[in-house]
Image (cartoon, rainbow, N blue to C red; front, side, top):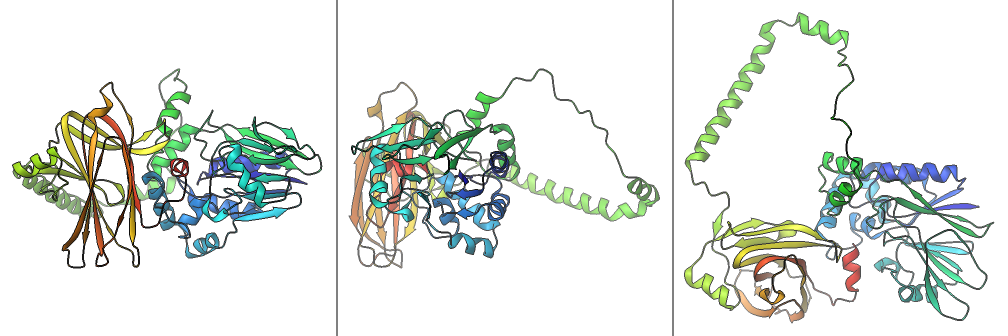
Length: 479
């Protein structure tokens, strides 16, 4: 029996079809999907329908569970969380119900499968090293385990003497007395390496695992993302430029424009009076837009609203802002965040990708020493006693000194009438992780961060949670 083990399709129907065709040519008898059919990509409906039709076994991934509301998105990057919301809106109630009942693991003869590790499949922990693999071996008895989630093909082995090691991801025959964990890589979202769709074939007669690797058309994938109104993956543009071959000649169209004969006849027979309503409507719309443009030009040319920002923590820069009553230019960011600038001409914030840490960030750019203020208000969950926050500076993007960056943060606890119950402050130069007790009367918390610097810096988008952080930092980085 031959099994095709696929994982991490991420709404990429084109890559999935290529892999399924290759699996058929390789005489695979069953298709087992390790999860993450959805998330990130431009074709969630098409990919889900294809998996539903073709896969013999389909497991739940963290992105699938997030779409079906079985898994929270608090630890997801902004880019990942936005794609989850878009995919959820495109799917029917039947699709969401099917996703909600997907199993987290499956066991076959001599092997087992899950999306993350086997110690707690519902939490989708990553297996990135031999040490990460040990809990899964302790939890299972099968000699061969298949997992996905990391998007990187990998092999981890537990030898007879109890030692572990990571092997090169290539075709291999299972040895007696040795246990294996195999990651087939990603079908539709290969972020690492040479960017090819990858999956595995397991032959239980030959007792052998084959790694399959197929070309991945980054350019057409990028065009599809744009055509469906999806934000481009942060890594996609750079990798597309690396892979793009230079054109030998300019673009040219060789096809004739063929107009059906019936349309030509209809156009000939239509009297001019038929066009009169359309002309009048178009003229009315033109006049309305012209009047709106003229009225806007007559008003203030400021493109951004100016508002008084809430009182900040007692840093030197913030005191100066309050004392001089400086008007802050505010701009909306993803997931309810807002950024406030003292001087919009010399300050800028945009969402970017830190490739060293593989994490979505706020790229803060200051031409002169100044402060950008970030704020977000969140409701307090019933019965919660503490809130956990984390602020991390990932890297600097120029040659300026690291100690020129500093931040202060402030938590404002309010009651149902908006009155301030308590305030808590933190400050630092690179990072700060802390917990604060929530007053019993609180119904909302305002989280304010003031970052003072000059130059360009990558700040990890701050997160906060009402339950104690138990997951590893690398789990948040990889989502």
